[in-house]
Length: 329
Ligand SMILES: NC(=O)c1ccc[n+]([C@@H]2O[C@H](COP(=O)([O-])OP(=O)(O)OC[C@H]3O[C@@H](n4cnc5c(N)ncnc54)[C@H](OP(=O)(O)O)[C@@H]3O)[C@@H](O)[C@H]2O)c1
Image 1 (cartoon, rainbow, N blue to C red):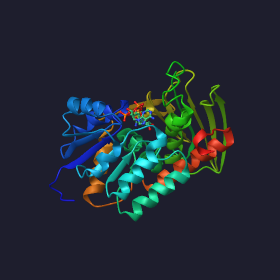
Image 2 (tube, helix red, strand yellow; image 1 turned 90 degrees about the vertical axis):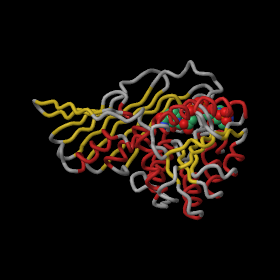
Image 3 (spheres, rainbow, N blue to C red; image 1 turned 90 degrees about the horizontal axis):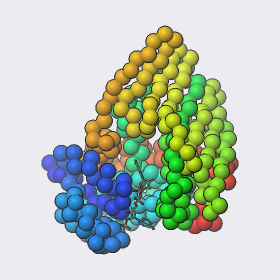
Image 4 (cartoon, rainbow, N blue to C red; image 1 turned 60 degrees about the vertical axis):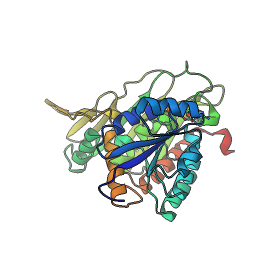
């Protein structure tokens, strides 16, 4: 890719997150929102008009084959991530795919293989990995700023029982439930700071249609523990506590998009502000651009292996707590 060129983005699935993402894409100098695709041409055209996008397509496949984009942003429900990413990768189009990359590790393996085989960029849109405050906290934890890390407590829950039963949050055929949608964030934080646990405990509660609605998780490490929670039945604090032998970091609500952190010691609290650019997606977009411009197939910051590990952790939690999807059986 020529360093002078703008990177041409295509949006697959003009839903809620796609709108937010594009508002940040428009802040990136060398990005161009070139195309948008929906299952309905009308919806694609509406989106194209709103965001001044040159090409609108009435199917995802048409966009991918159109030659109008360098990279697609996959923003559909989870269960379509794999097939759409594979289609793009085998067509030589790069992929930034919303989290979770696949609904299980097997899917993620297929996606990673396709990326390597076709020499096409693939990254999971784990935007919190690129959040400046979270990056700084990771660096400080690694440098021993709070002594030995012993405990992480992170949650992510909101009330969603009033959502439409066909919505992706509550419809099992769209891989509904809290774990893949929001439980992924607390799991990510524990993995980022402590790595793979030795042992996992997990228990879930379910909707009558089989959707998993609450999941409590313990990750046990050789010298530390993490208590993680996700839910659709009530709002939670949405904070993350990262506790070491000589101090504690606190990421305030909503911690996965933090704009600063607190460093708490015995008689001292330090408040650090680290404002986001845009609404927080900007930072992952810069990483995608950096990788594309150096012809890389993966990011070093959130790598293929990181996505494989994250999906493995979610598979293990699912096995312990009995979370299944109808399309997997
Ligand atoms: N990073 C973040 O902060 C964040 C936040 C929210 C969600 N997400 C992720 O983004 C993805 C999409 O979430 P969202 O909240 O934007 O969902 P959404 O508003 O429901 O939009 C999903 C889009 O996918 C398309 N789609 C394709 N097949 C579909 C089907 N069978 N049912 C419904 N929609 C279908 C729809 O577009 P057309 O029908 O027009 O093609 C729809 O607009 C999820 O994987 C989620 O985990 C990430």
